[in-house]
Image (tube, rainbow, N blue to C red; front, side, top):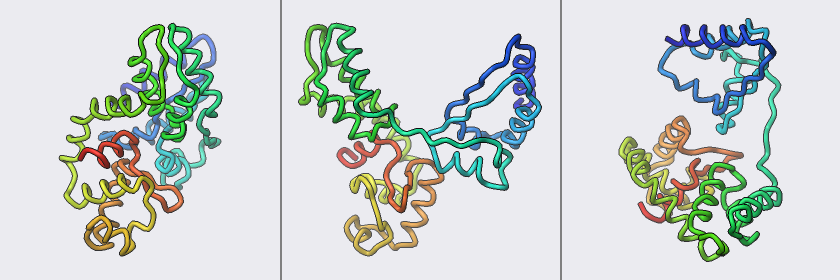
Length: 242
């Protein structure tokens, strides 16, 4: 099936009447496909394609880095890598304020800045909360700072069932370590006796084993020795509800 689908796709590209630019978002997900050799098949097709240039983007930086920088991977050294920083806070604030005004509403700039800062400019999470704030603001009204807590609660609880399903597939050790990281916000020295004692965890080795699996499943992300729950809303739910 993957071979047939790729053949059809690239045949369509080859028959195009002008050169194409193909952008594939969340490209790292192909690594989780059940079919074998999808990366190798796609790499072969791209090498043979003369009518298109490709852009591969993804939100899991460590996975994307492994796909393109590991000698054992089909896409090794096949691209020019570029890291994208978050949209600058003032640029995003102008964007959000203009949209509110276009629909007969207004929003305090400090509200938008607070949302951007809480989610470190990660667009999906910022957009989710801003959409909820927009829905809570009636035409002619203003979105105020004191609406933030309720908006966060709405967004988080709307996904509670999905979060419960995620937890049901984890071991007890993974759940406790994940919740500890969520409560910490940004967790460092997670195998230290201080961290283990604070959250009533088991041994350092069991914490390491749990975190290894959580990283593999993209539930936790690691940067410079610091760990956090990848999904900000899931993290909030774990730390305050579960």
